[in-house]
Amino acid sequence: MKLHRIVALITRHLYLYRRSLPRMMEIFYWPFLDLVVWGFITIYLMRFQGQLPGVVTFFLGALILWDVLFRAQQGITISFLEEIWARNLMNLFASPLKPSEFLAATMALSVFKVTAVSIVMVVAALVFYSYNLFLIGLWLIPFVLNLIVAGWTIGVLTTSLIMRFGQEAEVLAWGMVFLFQPISCVFYPIEVLPRWLQAVAWANPAAHVFEGMRLVLNQAALPLMHLAWATGLNLLYLALMVGWFHHTFSICKERGLLVRVGE
Amino acid sequence: MPTSIVEVRNLTKRFGEFTAVDGVSFEIRQGEILGLLGPNGAGKTTTIQMLLGLITPTAGSIRMFGLDLATHRETILGQINFSSTYISMPYSLTVEENLWVVAKLYGLTNIPRHIDEVVKKLEMEEFRSKVTRKLSSGQMTRLTLAKAILTEPKVLFLDEPTASLDPDIAHKTRHLLKEVRRSAGLSMLYTSHNMREMEEMSDRIIFLQRGKIVTQGTAQEIMARFGQSDLEDVFLKIAREK
Ligand SMILES: Nc1ncnc2c1ncn2[C@@H]1O[C@H](COP(=O)(O)OP(=O)(O)OP(=O)(O)O)[C@@H](O)[C@H]1O
Ligand SMILES: [Mg+2]
Image (cartoon, rainbow over all chains, first blue to last red; front, side):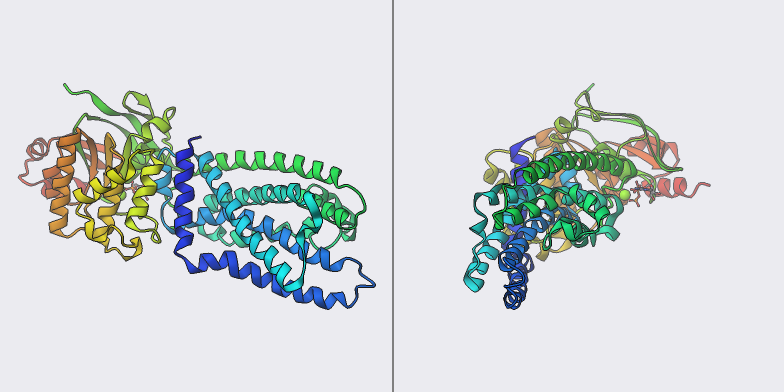
């Protein structure tokens, strides 16, 4: 890996954001709107505080953390789509750039994106609903890191599909992540799922993070097991997905698809 | 005899049942401009994309600077570049930003100096700070040419580089390419559907049809071989056979 090539790609995308209103809205406006809607829902639910303890802390916290995963995924997939839309893939892959460097750059971009979106959401939650995400404490750090990696995995998966199947697969950039939402147990505990689906959910690192978050907020126990599972599963899936991306990349070169994606 | 920079042996590309490039062999020598001529669908672009590592050949070998492209991708790709009317550059960046990104990608040092030089060479001063979206198609072509010579490649692959240029700019571009070739000893592989341009630019021409080389040599040799006084007549004769 060569750092200068990764820096080149990152800079190219930062230039892009600097001059584009829709792209800035993606970072500032939409997450903010999301939070406002969920904030009102929580205020409404607070009336039933007695029956549902801790509902406020759960909902807004879960929403902000879910957005971490979502934006991490988008950071990767949208960066790839940007190259398709700009008809820039040929320029990139006829240069010495390696697929792994491409992925590294999009991962870095996704961290920028997550950071920017999280700042917006955390501040807005604090200002409008007096909600402090840092109630979760230092556990927040490993939780967020795990969610970012889970987002990368889905991002790399989606990118491979778009590269392989072209324009028709583009909607996956927005939809794919929601396939995983029901089994991520973002807003409800895993025990509400039917038993067979619980088994599936335990294989999902994000479910472990959200279960862990609930443990911490309920001050029930330390989420060590959940963190261990999340980390292990994440590393396994990420490695598999990166391998699959490389495999797809070489299939696309074989079939001459790389020069045609988006046409 | 000058050494060959590019050596292609038995290059073949099949897409499923269809053979787009069929056992093509050629070489490009140091400082030489090789023209690739042929009707639509003959396999010119596919050949170039294999040489750029964007399409994996079904069979055959590609060597540049004595190295195999299959095993020395990074080293080789750092020393070549390409331009074509079919490619584009990111629209939301300015011309200079785009050039900066390319320079960084190829690991150039002293980037501002390189950019100043290429902007001057291609007479791009008046639109260097413009957003790429606002360029005319001719300016866009100049930008993609600029990105190709910016990285000081040893071989340049040009797929119809002058297709959307007005005659004045096209003339200047050809002049410039010959100038770059002279000063930097660069080799080029060139495609065009403009016969006069082909004749003017190429030291040697390869005529491809249905993925196969049907004839090759200097423009003079080819015209003599087919008993024509004009390359266009040779083209028509070959293209209309069978
Ligand atoms: N990815 C692909 N899958 C299937 N067939 C392809 C693919 N790429 C090219 N072809 C086919 O290979 C043949 C050669 O195409 P190519 O683009 O190389 O021709 P060309 O000589 O550049 O033509 P033109 O003068 O029109 O640019 C065409 O018949 C084309 O349809
Ligand atoms: Mg072509």
